[in-house]
Length: 491
Image 1 (cartoon, rainbow, N blue to C red):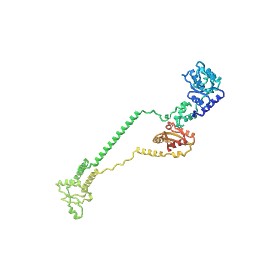
Image 2: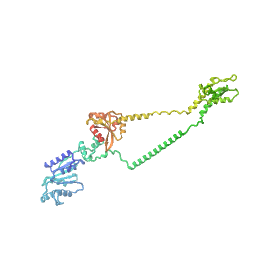
Image 3: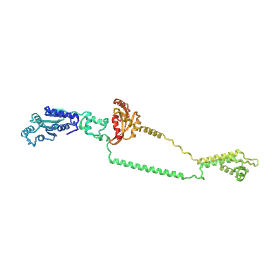
Image 4: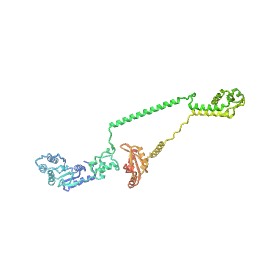
């Protein structure tokens, strides 16, 4: 017994049975190919008239009239002796006289392969049969059997098409799915086309790549990553080696740069010019003499003879070596004849010495490390990360509190949450929410715009969306469906 049958088709089966009971013994079920005429005929012969002798024959182009006649008589009588020289009606009358049979029900599937002789014999038996005989023939065009009653089989409506697919397929996509809707519209209510639906059509939108190319790409990626890792480690090793060598290197105190030598020569030249006119000799008094006076040892400038050149060189070298400030130097002015060294001249020598020492000290002072300021790209990335963190606040609890009759617009559905966040940021949409669901045990992230009190508000809002969003064919969805998708994750 066939259990899966639409209510409209079950009503048509009852209508055919009622026509037989009203006295119409020959009926033709008319309809295009694929509408389910054979399925309907099998349902009728299975569920109706259990006490009849039944014969279901699928007529093809290869079947002969004698073979068809033999099959009909064998299913109606018990071990009949069929005379091939006689017609179907003559054999039926003769066999009934020798061995009477009960009521019969014949179903011939494929009227276009019946010959005119067989059609005439069926008309004679339906009118003059000695027993109750019901004959049902399936035909693709009307009036193929002139004496038969034509009952037309109509196409399925859109709701019946969904109901038929739900009987044979467990996991159907959502009704709002554009691919599923296109499939229903192109099927035009033909059950044969509806039952050819494949669940893989929803996911396999691209042609599968061969395993060899996949393995080749994986191998190339592995080799590339290995080379990058080796190069990175080699660079780190070189940087560490050079930094270690720089740390170990110590500056030599006996080596002076060219700039330092030039500055020292300039200082010596200035000191020579100042002291050239007056021969000055720097005399370092003994420590004992200064200790007696309670003072630290200080350098004393003593006037040298005019004809003394060694005193000038000695004074210049002493001025270069001195690093004490001018206020700490005790000066003793010694006069020899009419020449003497004034305080201003000594200050000039010492200031020259101090400037030379400062220039030398600047070479050894390390410059502080420059503070690295964040670049503009880093600031943009930080702001983008801040926005993404705000989008990560999933409104799942709020969505579950909404009524089932509320509507929403599904804008996008992807497997990567980062892509969903980028989509929202790029289009700058309002009242947009992201929630997680499962499809074929794979996490998906769905972007919706909600809420809308009715479907008209949702449609008007969809028309106002940007062209970039409308290119993705957004569709409407009820919150009842959204809650079911969210609960797939929470189970």
